[in-house]
Every structure is written in C-alpha cells, then in structure tokens.
Image (tube, rainbow, N blue to C red; front, side):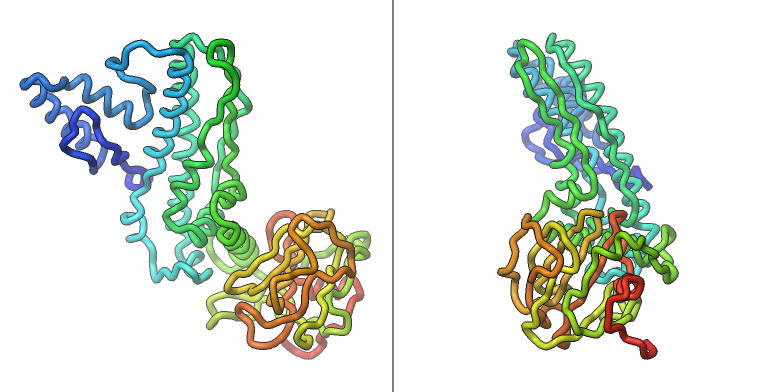
Length: 394
C-alpha cells in the first residue's frame, strides 16, 4: 500500500524541454525517459546516461550533474541543501486520489468519520512515517557523500525521526487536508550554519505533530490540536469508542482549582451526543446569564485566544502542571487578557456568551491533561468540593 501512496515526483526532466511532467510508477518513468533520450542521442541532443542522471537529480538523490562544471564550496553546499528539499518533495508526493478511494462514508469535518476510517488513516500514518524515515536516511548519505566530495567539513546536530500515529494524521487531515505534504516538506527542511570554506553545522528538524500543525494558520493549528485531543480521548487505537473513565487527581492539585463562574451549576454532560450524534461532549456546561464574568479557574499562562466554529470565542489557559483549561462560547473575543499573559486564579478572562456551536448562554469548560486527553471537569470539581453540582439524572 505504501508504494501506492508514495508516487514518483512530477518534476520536469531538463534534458527534455518539450514535456513538462512525467507520471506513473518509477519503472515506467525511467523507461520513458531513457527511450526518449536514446532517440535524442541519435539526433545529437542528449544521452541515456544524462537522462538517468537527470532523473536522480530530480528525485534529490544527487546534488549536481556531470555537466555542471566547476563550483565554489558555497555553491556546492547550496546545491546539497537544495537536493535534500527535492528529496522531501519526491518522497512526500502522495497519491491522494488513490488513498481517498479507500475512505468509507467520509465527511471531512465530522470527527466520527475519522474513527470509521481508522484503517485508512493508519495506512496514511505508515506512509508518512516511512517517507520521513527514508528521507532522513537518504539525506544523511547525500550530505556525507557530497560535502566530503566538495571538501566541506561538517558537524551534525542529533537526528530526530518522527513517527506519526493514525490519530495524529487524522487530526492533521481534519485541519489541512492534502496540504499535509507541503507542511511536512517545510518541517523537514535541513538548516545549515557556518562557512563552507571552514566548517558547516547541519541542523536536523524535529517534525513533531505540534510543529507540523504550526506551519498553518493559527486557526488551523488550533483545529488540529482540538481534533487530536478529541481522538485521543474518545477513540482507542483500533478506532472503537473508549469507555468512560474517571481521572483521580491529587489533593495538592485540586487545591489549585476554583469555580470559573461562581454560583453557576456545574453540569455532568460528559459523553453526551452532539452535532446530530456525530461527536461526544468532552467538557462541562455551566449556564449563566449573558456577559457574566468568566474567571480563570487556575493560575497559568494564556496560550490561545480566538474563534472557531465549534468553540466560538475561546480562551485557553495552561497551568504550571501542564493542564489546559478551555473556556468556550464567550460573548466576544476576550479583551481582558492577551496571548502570553500570566493570569491568577479568579482573574477575569472573558464574559459568558453563546457563540459557536451553542443554543443558550453558558460557559463550556474543557480540561486537557498534559498527555493530550480531555478529562471530565465535573469529576474534577466533585473531587475538589467545588459546586453547586448537578445532582439529577443525566
């Protein structure tokens, strides 16, 4: 399946100006180029050897051509770095059309669709991880070989090889779609520092999920993170729904939490169906009148402020323990705090509203663990002795 996902690059073969793109698998591509080049050789316009060399150049396997002539060390260094970029583009040219044919009843903005297609996203994750690992191995060879040939001393930072799982790939696809390939290419770019005549240091990238997501807009990054938190919480590795769990927190930690809208009744709506039963509720709702002050439940740092279709206007605060507190449906974008601000427990961070996916004025509070999973805020407040709490049947 991997060979079906990772196709040949569509980069042009310079020795044939008349045909811009070459498609198909590697073997047919090579045969086509060589046959054309042999024909050109008879007319004195090219050789099969040069065509094969050009193909390796386009795929990023070599940094220069035998026809290039003399180069300075800096030119050689620039060519090597360019070759690593071409290699990334080649390896990450996925056959999205073929992959999409494996999706079943897929709706790109519905969380449940991703779990129903867990096998397809596992295949995508395997393809991405294999491509990244192949890229890392190939670039090590290219750098070592071509910089040594150019007599450029090199030292290297530690090499990190990212392995993404299906939930991470699903979350990235939820936010970015087929743009994942471009994001990965940007994150895989090798950086160099130093003087080619003396010594260069090569810095290997660390394309973690968060780094890849941050290549997009602020809204796209947040959508990807929220999708991943949801997938981590609601689904098991096989795509089935995870059972209800209760997080037990230490007394020390519980002492750091306060009610975000004092007097409001905290509802236990955990795992209630939402959006026509296409997703589960992973927070607690606290109904209060419009424009009621929302207070930070903890000390922490404001990491995100913005608007998205489901949360509406939101603020996210991360406490010193690594827990994130998500405050949704605010009346307006918060003017009480800014991203990067330190806040104290009880400090106002917004006002109650009904923006986003909401039908009544209330605060939706979500709590995300340092491991990237939602936990039930109702259970947290119950353990902390904070109320009033809803006591009737759900």
